[in-house]
Image 1 (cartoon, one colour):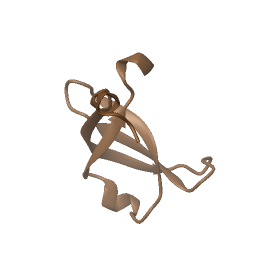
Image 2 (cartoon, rainbow, N blue to C red):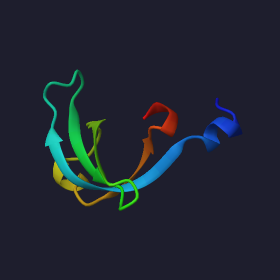
Image 3 (cartoon, rainbow, N blue to C red):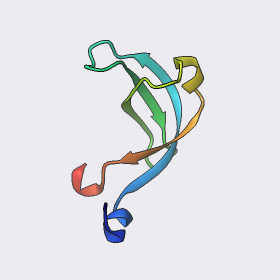
Image 4 (cartoon, helix red, strand yellow):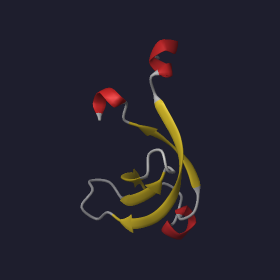
Amino acid sequence: MITYEDFRRVDMRVGRVLVVEDFPEARKPSYKLTIDFGHEIGVKKSSAQITGYRKEELVGRLRCYQLPTQKNR
């Protein structure tokens, strides 16, 4: 469990999924995501393990993501 001070340092942002691609080279079944976090952060790439969503279902959705902190960027 993390402390409240540790939690305050976590950078959680909402972004809109723009593109979802297969990620066949991943160890576990995953998608490559292109996510728009708005003008302050811009468009970033990430990946996500496939759970219960098809690619078509993710495009356009707003999702919450943990971004690297300034210290780790």
